[in-house]
Each structure stands twice: as C-alpha cells, then as structure tokens.
Image 1 (cartoon, rainbow, N blue to C red):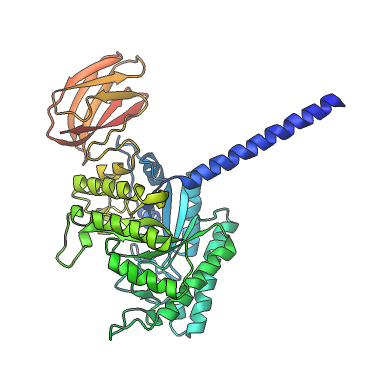
Image 2: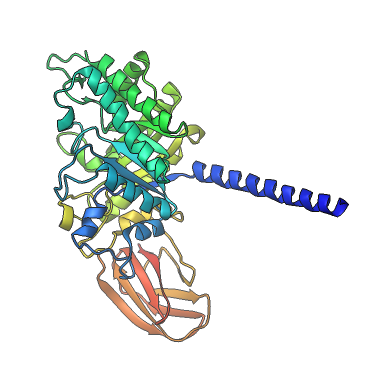
Length: 444
C-alpha cells in the first residue's frame, strides 16, 4: 500500500510539474515579440499558380519561408460578402478560417482584421457591406456584433482562438460611412457617439467569444501624434473599450509631397508610441508597415528601425511589428511595397525580422557553416563547416537572385575564397548534393 501511495504521489508530482511547465511555455509564447505578416493575398496567389522559393532557390510553402524569416504572427483581413476579384475580393469568413488553421498549424499566432465592408476599408473609403446598406443605425449595431461574433466563434469552434481582433481598419475617419463618419463636410465630428457604440459592439462580441482575445483599434499615420491624441481622447470621453492601439506606418505615403526617407518620420513614430502608452496606459503595435520593393536596402533599414523603436517602448508595451503583404509580389498584385521578387523569392528586406540583426549589418549563420569576416570589405572570405564532407558547390547570389560568384570547395572544415563583389547584401549557398544551406553576407 505504501509503495502504491508513493507511486501515486510521484505521478501527481510529475503531472503538476508538466502542467506548470506548460503554463510557463504558454506565457512565454504570449510574451514573444510579434514579428508578423499580413498575407490576405496568399490563397489567391497560390490558386493562380504563383510559385514561392526560398533564398536557396528551392520551391517551398510561403508560410514556411516566412517562418524561416522568424515571422511568428499572421494577420488576416475578413470581408463580409466579398467578390471573386483576384486582388480586391475573397477574404470571406470561410477563406479566413482556412488560412488561420494553416497559420496555427505552422505554430504562428493569429490576428483577425475586421474591415466591416465587402472590400477594402481604409482612410479614403469605409463603405458598408451591400447587405447592410439600407439598415438603420440600430440594425448596424447588431450587424457589427453578429458578424464579429460569427467569425470569431467559427474560428474558435474550428480550433483557432485568435490572439487579437482588430475592430475596423485605419479608422481615424470613422467607419461604416456615413453613420459613423468623423470627417463631416463642416469639419465637425458629430458621429463620435455612433462610432463609439459600433466599436463597443465589436469589443463585446470578441470578448463574448473568448475573454482572452485582445481588441485592437487601428489608425493610419502612426507618426502623427496630434491625430492619435485627438482620436483616443475622444474615444476615452465616449467610453470606447479596447486593449491595444494599432498603428500603420508607411514612409512612402507620408505627406502629399511624398517624403520617402523614413529618417524624416521614424522618431515621430517612436514618440507617438511612447505617448500612447503613457497617456492612455495601453499597449501598442505597428500592425501595418511597408516600403518600396525596389529599394531593398532602404526598406530593410526602415524595418530594422521600426522594430528597434517598438522594442524600446517603455514597460515592454511595444508588442510587435507586422509587414503588410510581404509576399504580394508586384508582378502578381501590382502593389509596390511588398518584400518579394517576381522570381518567387523574398527580398533581403524581410531579413530585418531575423534575430541576429544589428542596424545595417545583418548576420544570420545557419547550422552547417559560418563565414567570416561578416560584414566584410571584400578580399578573402573564410568558411568554417561544422563537419567534414565531400566537395561543396558554393554560390553567391545578390538580393535579386542573380548568381555573382561560384566555386567548388574541397571536403575540409576550413576553406576560403576571393571575393569580387560590390558593396551590398548577398546570400552564400553551400550545396553538397544531399544538403544545402545558406548564409547572408554583407559587403561594405
């Protein structure tokens, strides 16, 4: 009897330890800095035959490539009754559930972005879904609650409880126009009472599905502190309920004259995030960011700066950064601010999300081999392999996937090669026939 009691005690102890460890792991995952990608176009890109390749040129699942870039969060927009248009349709409830399941299967976190429209909702348009167009305001309140609840509850019933629900998309001018439009012709903001009720209906629906879901309110122009103060001061007065302030930051679109240099606005973004935390006691997240796909180095630098500024928000209340449609190659979408080439490979700008990144000198060594010096100024590049193997074909590609240099190295732990490269970012691929690996190289 005593032995059985001891054995039972041990099993109970092990179970408690396991449960404690699971809780610790879960809390650690929740605290993880968000490195995200909005990929609403991905299903249609796949359906229309677009092929995705990793930096080594191997065809791969886009989500897997993003995960290798340390993307840990997927943001998905949802429209009410969308069309089948390739780029301005889809993103229905059913399609969103399928994508959320795919993301969760990859170990990624999920954010749902409610546009409350049949297509794009943004600063220039907040059009009601056609099915709601003739509804009274009282009916609109029910529409927002029911749609939000239905989408989130369906996700939960299918096994995905989103970590965040964004109520409205870039809504500094309100949503569901004209019922909750803030920019009236006379400059007034008479519809604040309407907007506050709609936002609270979305909040209540999300919390009714699962109280753990964090509600995000998202404005454009993340560098514009006066806009954010005006909006959230009014939201506080009106009793709007939410958990997180979401910001968009697109240096390319800042000001009518088009200031393209992020250095002109990055400190404004940082100051605004810090002010939102101190003024309202909320967490902040850059839920949309992007810059030109043709200016890879500049976009990379901008992303590094945004990540650094978000990490620096006091109290750990800068939750993360999400790139808007990094996979949406212009050759398919017509969109110029992705991080993808027409050849199906990501650009080096996306490497800003890699952990071992420092300012302009990213270094990310894989498990099979390392290179040094990195960054370097040209000259001799040294290789150190983890194991002795047969000969290896070593190739260096530029950020557009063009082969720049190539050499066969003998089976030895250490090798070297003479570089003949202009300053820039490159990818060094070593292929032994049955194993292939890649390392990023920075030439000053």
